[in-house]
Image (cartoon, rainbow, N blue to C red; front, side, top):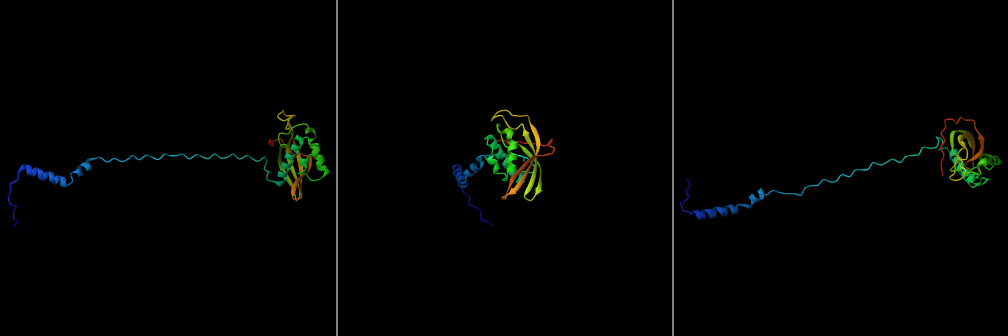
Length: 202
């Protein structure tokens, strides 16, 4: 059997001191820490930035389905040059001749074509819409519908000189020295009734 502890007499004051020291040694401040609420900084939500939707750039429709043909591209260059000659009142059409074969026939065709407009102003190249490109090798025919009247102005910024009139015109193109050039102009027979003709301004 165990030896029982010896009996001793202890005062109440001494007992209270012993209890107080025991509580302090056991870390009484831990209870205070446990009872104290913990606080943390609130987490702020990151702002959401909306991604802008890109706006597509409108693509201008080609003037005709034949715009990629080299004969038509050469014809467009000639039309712009001849319009510049008209505005400068150059009766020999020196700029247009850069896009023509070197023959008297084509030079005469050009003079006849623009004879009535040398006292007017062209706000852009003669509006024309190719409706067929035929031929092979070094010679080709570009059938077009042209605004033959009602495009030229009486003066820069002035009114249209004549009533609008659409006519069929066939342009003969010849490949010379590696480039397509105008070789002739004749009145055509195509039906231009339903053809949309769009002009290009300077």
